[in-house]
Image (cartoon, rainbow, N blue to C red; front, side, top):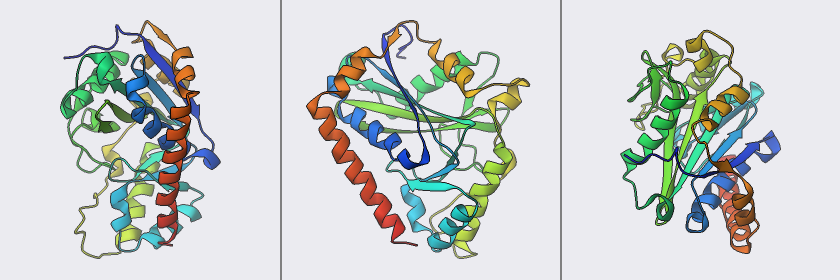
Length: 274
């Protein structure tokens, strides 16, 4: 199994405001497209405020406009991403963390499960006092085969995107805050979006108690800054200058423009549902 903790990694931080929410996946997709230009794996940290990130599958909700209005009335922002299938919550207690693995840097292409295992190993090393397991937590929001859980309660979910040059494994970690409330909001989003119609797209039956936070499990306060630092501490050799130089390249700026246009069109289609 590949171990990237002994490699040099580049760091990219994005604390985003609602007006710039789309930058999260705009940069994610652009960095992935630039994999063949990256000199090392990249660690991408980003945060959003009071936002529900929808998946492509959520467009199938028969009463989507009602569900979206529910989010707006709760004072929540939302947008649709082009990776992963279902809705997740993101706020000041959620840390979003991605690892970009260029094939030419790590010595060859990884299988899907192998890429997920890289992220799992990093998180497990960052929290040695927790016994973190992988496997679908069926009644969580956005359930998946590589959900991260402790004692049967989900603390994070993963998705990945890949191309011929590399892969990005994307994780959200529930660090602190009202996880029960997050679960209730996403549960009610689907309830209002379905309205007792046949659930032929298999939207999840969410039990808010199926998820928890790392802070709750540690039984002591844990800030996002501390959670980020724990992940960084796994990598002794890290910097940001090489990535910054790559991001100033004409090709990368072109990728950014193209990816922003693509994800903006997704939002326009979503607004058409309202």
